[in-house]
Image 1 (tube, rainbow, N blue to C red):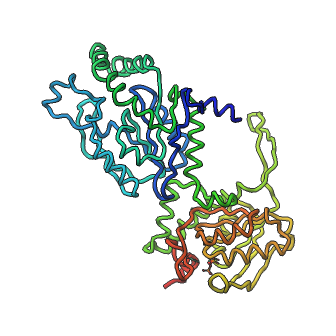
Image 2: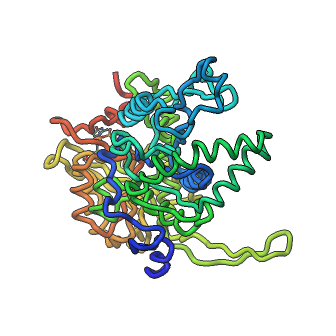
Image 3: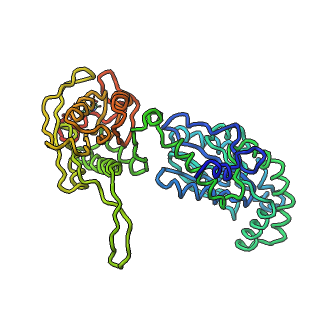
Length: 454
Ligand SMILES: O=P(O)(O)OC[C@H]1O[C@H](OP(=O)(O)OP(=O)(O)O)[C@H](O)[C@@H]1O
Ligand SMILES: O=c1cc[nH]c(=O)[nH]1
């Protein structure tokens, strides 16, 4: 889409309906903390549709949706007797302290107990919902932008704006027609509480929003732009912004779970191998996605034409002995009959690594090379291995380095020196310790994989 199209969708003009306000999105404070999105707006404005679209379009991310309704106070039997006089649209109807503490827990990577509120009995029911930390937390509700402490925790604040007649019509449809509530009650409640509270408490929060979406969930273009923005904010480790040649595979709960297992010192050898193999397979598949392809049409058994692609065939693998050899099976499983060369580099640290042995396909210069090594620490071995490939005539842009965990120091060493090479990894770790071990890391990969540790 060109810029004028984007401007039309976002109406980047402050006089128009949907615009980016000056309080532009806050970047997540650290890659480990979830990205919090608050979606506010009047009753029946389309908030849930917006949240569901964000959820479905970011299905490859670990995402949780939390509704502000969960934090409604349980009503006592006394109040329930006069429930028609109760204002469910007033900020005091919500347990904001509990909402805030739950968000803080999630922000700090802890599990939060979110109340299960029953909208019919107007009481909380046990047990609460256990919400685990995720990459993205979407908090939806009429007043999620009302409390400044909650606003401060949000990385992106969205206000869904819809015409009040449309909102009223939807509310009648929802409560009176779908839920069988008395239409007069619905209208009375709207006039006594919903409309005045919208004007007094909900509408004034629009000014805090980074994005205002007119037409709610029907505004496909605005949703697409929001998704693109979230992906940019989320997916990128700071190093990915510096080096465009790093590709970190998208994390999911499955991937995080496998990392949790292989990093755990108590994991058995059998499980370490099993889960490393699963992760390696994902990295290999992702890496193959960076190879060139040519378009091809085939005829399917239904006689129809399918427009597809064929993979590049001039490939080879090169494993860095010995940990890199753990990645050979996955490569063979994906690329039938692939040639795999070997490089042995020995020694420790940034200066001490020496090339000891190499055996590479004689025509390697004309191939794309998938370099295999699960751990990138100081980068010393990788620099030696890549330098050898270049000496053999391999084009730097034809090298894809496949890796499980990478330390920032190794990334700097490799990506700065070889900007045309691609590095595909599954996680970027925090740092190295004084012995050049990756932190938090997973210990000695080779020893754990090949069971040579004590
Ligand atoms: O980035 P660097 O500081 O060079 O460290 C990374 C190297 O360390 C590991 O091998 P290791 O020396 O542990 O040998 P192994 O594979 O035989 O266990 C890993 O497989 C890399 O080859
Ligand atoms: O932490 C580290 C560093 C190098 N090699 C490993 O296997 N682990």
